[in-house]
Image (cartoon, rainbow over all chains, first blue to last red; front, side):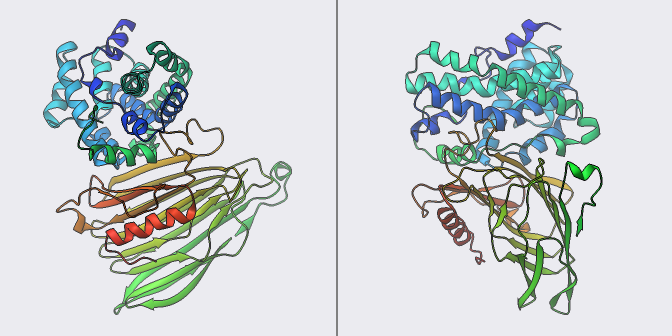
Length: 224
Length: 270
């Protein structure tokens, strides 16, 4: 196991197609709810505590070797927005392509064969972490970081934010990300006893609503 | 209903209310019978006039509850082919209390094959200083039908919100169809920010499960005939159901979102 593997998995330049997605930031910016670094930080804090926690828990759970198909069904149940289910599967499919070459592993091949349209992205991330020799806690860290870094990177482009100030937003959320990753790892460790229904299901109404509104836009810069 | 006995431990927890109210509905000769109608704690059940084969119960909240520390449950069983409509006469106001512990409100709804439940209570209002954790567990047989609304108002007029969490878990034919957990109020990260509520303090859901939604799956409907400051969208779940998710600045605008959703879905309101 190497911490460098975690850096590779979390790197924004990892060729997983995530750069085309804003994590709901484009819709929030268009509505005027996110307009500077302070509101961006608030957006990211709320996203991290809700869908970020769910993603981190699913990633950590997949990294323990738990049945990814059961986790995929749990992800569906936690995603009432069909636009977000489509995005999660598309991102999962793209990440799968990248990680099967980066860290070849028969578990990845089996999941890709079972769900050719793509598994939910956090589950692929968890299996990728497992294939890279990382821990479930590391998988949760990668997913938590992903839930923040996506909107921050998008906001730099959409709002023309100072990249230094935007990166400082990510840095200020380090403690929140560690807390979420720790909580997610705890849930994953209790999974054999508690079952998937005990995994977090934290929801953010505006992310669900605006994902559907955004998907209906005729022209947009980001896919989600 | 039981009140904690005055033991030594009760010195720290002077008063908590534990109550479990129960309803059982059964189909009988083109009507729905209610062989068990057990009011308990704050929940007092009143039979209203049936509508065709549908029985109608109204829940009266006859006490000031829940206060922090209370443990309240409602258990509903709708038997095969039965048809039950449940409403409430007033909002449930979650209130602070002398016990430094959250209140818990559990709702367990079980609906058998070819049975129907309409569960349309008035909102839960989270008063400042209150701490309520709600869990709605729904277990539906494959051909059961459900219409359920949930409305949360965060703070009475001109006061901050208390803390209100609500988990809704829907099992349908043995698999989990929907699992959502909302958590709002002081101390929770980002709850009032631009990703979650953005200052909207009225949140609602309307959940409709019906085998008819399996094929074809309905399209997403973005509600546009609602107040300008409110947002609502009806989405198809990953199974035979649809969910309205709505946020609004206040209870009145939220009610108009639910009214619009009932109309879009072609369902009778109330």
